[in-house]
Length: 349
Ligand code: PEP
Ligand code: MN
Image (cartoon, rainbow, N blue to C red; front, side):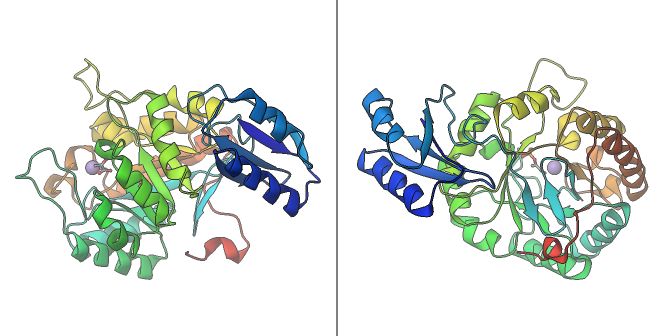
């Protein structure tokens, strides 16, 4: 259930309710909004608890939650979450653009891509150092050497780094370089990893599993939110269907559906979602038109020679053209790409 505090509730009253929730054997998740605080009380449906909470000083109302996901629910927090990582702002009217190679292959390749995507207007650099590959014989990533290359690219361009962490035991290492931890589609239901990533304190980008429902995606997000880390971005990256024309099927209706059920921002990955370079620009534009809060796009200096996902990567020129298109759609739907000033917005965490 959700305890909605009055707008004039004092910090002591909020603290008292948190303690009362815990005494009643439930977990308390306070969410501090700009106007009011709400406290999600998780773990019991007993109606008498609802009554005792409702009579506490400073409490406005107590609402039962019907959805199985609680803290991610729009019922709990009506205010949209905006995840901010340096110049990357994702959520509400802010469109975050994360671009870069599928895999970090070399310093030269990564730096060239970082410069190109920044010049075209991207607000974060992606690049896999730990790669989840279907075949154990495929390129597995440069691991820590790849993270160091990403850090060099950040130092030069100021772009925050988005990179995947594949195992709970790697979170500490990856979080020591990354600004935003990516949990890949294959790991969406690796609950230990989700908790560990949440506890790192870094913002988390959670990709939808190719066979996961949206409810399962929100329940996975709940594992991260339950660690107290509110900085979660969801990513629609396509699901597996009977269709063979595209690598996955990219269901853009997920975007408005998620906006109607969660306060968390949702971005779209048109690269994995289609698996074909030629389809990426239009699906990027369509995602923004559908209300996406951002995009994650694969870009490579020479896709033909890429060690992973070259067939779905854009060249620098194609990415710049895609950005021109996306900018026009963004304007039409009232979103802005660049992080607003003041300067505090551009300090990396
Ligand atoms: C990636 O972003 O390169 C990746 C492996 O994505 P996904 O987890 O969506 O397959
Ligand atoms: Mn990829």
